[in-house]
Figure (cartoon, rainbow, N blue to C red):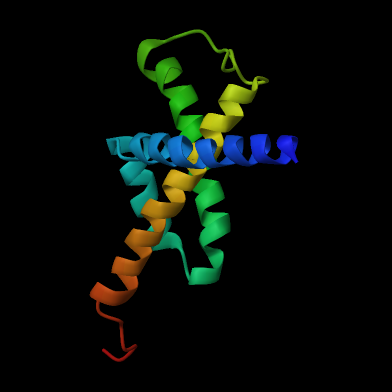
Length: 119
C-alpha cells in the first residue's frame, strides 16, 4: 500500500508541476502560433487528441531545428533525448497544448460565424 501511495503522489506532483510547465512553454509566441494553426485545422472535437499530438511533435521539432536554421548550429539530436526528463517535458508540453488548443477550438466553434454554403 505504501508503494501505491508513493506512485500516486508522484503522478499528482507531475500533473501539478507538469501542467504548469507545459502551459508556460505553450504560452510563448511559437507555441501560440502552433496551437492557433492546429485549432483552425481541427475539424471536430473528437480529433483533439491527434491534433494535439501533432502540434506537440511540430513544437518539439521546431525547438530542435530553430538553432540549426537561425544560428547555423551543428546538426545534433537533443542531448537528453533518451532521458526521462525530455519525455516528461514533452508530455507536459502535450498537456499544455491540449488546454490551449481546446480553448482556441472552443472559441472557433462558438465565436466565429458558420458558413452557410450559399453565396
